Amino acid sequence: MNKTNYDLLFKDTVKGLTQKKTLLLHSCCAPCSTAVLERVVPHFDVTVFYYNPNITESEEYYVRLNEQKKFLKNAYGEQVKLIEGRYFSREFFIMVEGLEKAPEGGERCTLCFKDRLNETAKVAKENGFDYFCTTLTVSPHKNSDLINSIGSEVGQKYGVNWLYSDFKKGEGYKCSIELSKEHELYRQNYCGCLFSKYVNLKVEE
Ligand code: SF4
Image (cartoon, rainbow, N blue to C red; front, top):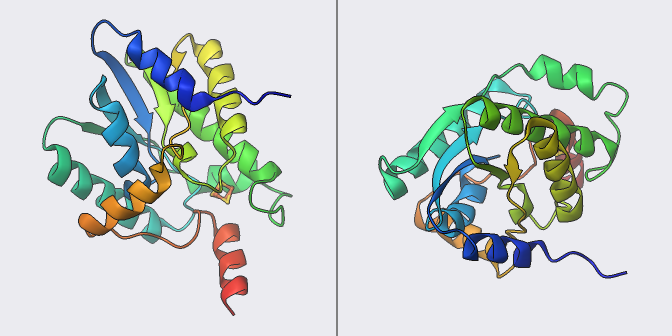
């Protein structure tokens, strides 16, 4: 079965734009946003949406949020704005109850993606954005088929265009590492929830 080339869909979409549209870009962290912003800013009027209740430790949540703010200010000045979403990690714990031991990339992560993309689509609709999207596909650990399928589904639910993409393509991930070094950004070594951190710590032992 032929796999959908989401990177090609992204290129087709931006090629078809006759003027800059507004884009609400969900961002999981500053490092992942670096390479994605390079690709979307030339085509869209971008606002970053930091909505990550999956970062279950508040100290870590605010470290990543501050890195995001620092990067946007240094790299884009006033050009790219930021909206901070609600932060109730308790809601995340309730949502994934029973899936604490699920492997990374499993059912817990599907719920986590759904929650973050649903909220992004909702906020995009409420604020009149033309498109919404996420930085998540820049990671080689994240399933782009799944993310695009969820994005498309919640886009239809709220009536906002999902921007198909696969930002890991074209060395997107490598580019994010290089840009993170260049901007001296903190790069965490685990995904976000306590469960992913615990697995990481086990692996390092
Ligand atoms: S491992 Fe990452 S994507 Fe999966 S549930 Fe935890 S924070 Fe969400």
